[in-house]
Image (cartoon, rainbow, N blue to C red):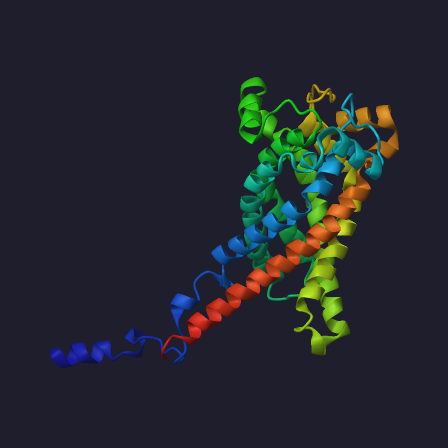
Length: 329
């Protein structure tokens, strides 16, 4: 009887599968590109926060230029808009609403980059040069991150306006909830997604293509110039995507600032109605209001974001590598 039992458990079907000596399953759970997904979230959160905080004054100028109606600033010139802000509120006026940006940018970019990496791994099929996979992954990432960021973006833009009636972030949140309801925080969500989907598709596809091209120009020094490559590719991607999607950004600003500082309030909230109002009041050029500061924002912002993100990824990869090397095999 004992012999039969021994024979049974010596059957190859019951023996454990041999693993290589350096196999450590605890190090291969939910990883991609040498990182755990929580590390992508931290890297993305740091990158997004640094990007938006550094470029916030430019974003304030853009918001002022895009707001129509009887708001104090009606000019489309960057210099005039900047001078008007400084004259009425001083340097502090360029940073109104930065608290809302800080609360929204970190979590939104954590979602953004982690979803992007997950989708890129799924859609690329192991091909790192698959531009279509990068674009689709970027669209998926922006739909998810915009759901997190849109409420704070609305608060931020209302605070950025000159003579804003709100005392701060929490005052704006409480008053919008009581006066307009929860839906006001997502009044521009459809427009934001419609804007950011093509923006992100162009951005990610351009970034990956530019990065690949720059590394091929000087492959022997690619590792030494990695930061420059990421910054240059990011700047090119950000500038192109920003200009292409400016009309929808103007619509988004109108929806988020409606009813504040005398800006128009839209009954239906449809994108078509906002387009018609802008064209009626300012012609087709009104759809390109703020394109210069938008481009000036997104080119360096993308350079900052991508270089910070890649630097954070490198830090975590080295950290994981040193942790792995400490395991006795």
